[in-house]
Image (cartoon, rainbow, N blue to C red; front, side):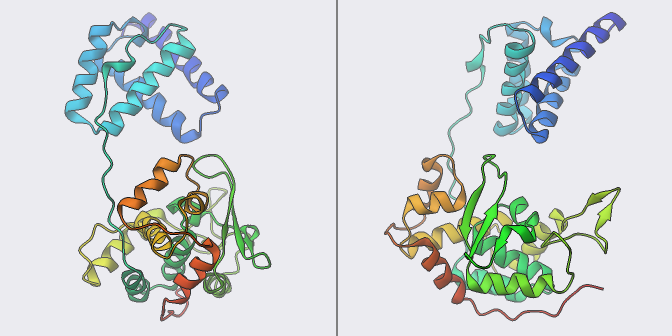
Length: 303
């Protein structure tokens, strides 16, 4: 772009960032949306407020051919936000892209397979992490960021704060999980975190470190393969699995929705495609499932 055009884009780009912040978007969304705006600008080498409908169609055709439908949807939302909140123009092309509705059925593990994976895991920290993620139905980051203050051993519940839906929730805490968490914490005794990362004092560049996300993802795939499990296993599979096991044991969809923190009951209803539904208490079901696991705990792997 010419210098004047670049200056105009820089001003619009900063206004875009400001609007994203004012609209309460998360840092991850701000990073994602701003990158999309830069990419469409670089594609045409022109300030995006000058783009025509036909040019946008060309751009989205390019995205459809080279990117995932998820990336296409994010780009559309990012550009739409730019028009609505920065340019103050009506967005006339919402239907440029209509990604096909897909509801793939995710692989789930049996209780025996979950037990096998935890037992075959060679490091105590990963063993406890996988049990915690499974038994509490957590997302990867939710379990990584657990703190001592989140664990209530008296009420036997865990307080999950500012989750994906930006809402707090409480989940039942099985006795076996509490004991595992306490045993693991005693190996590092971090003042706040359950799963600290790196070596003591677990701080890098002034920031407290949690356990490496890539490490837990890579390890569960390797262990599943060693166990002879051919399914596509990742950390989120544990969350799908516990939801399915609860449904099989008779827990209601409404209870599972609250347990997983789903904003939309339709998301939870997907699990009916994996198993049959009945109705009982989720806390009792959780303890029953977790108590059925026979785990051979490792020695502490901390230096």
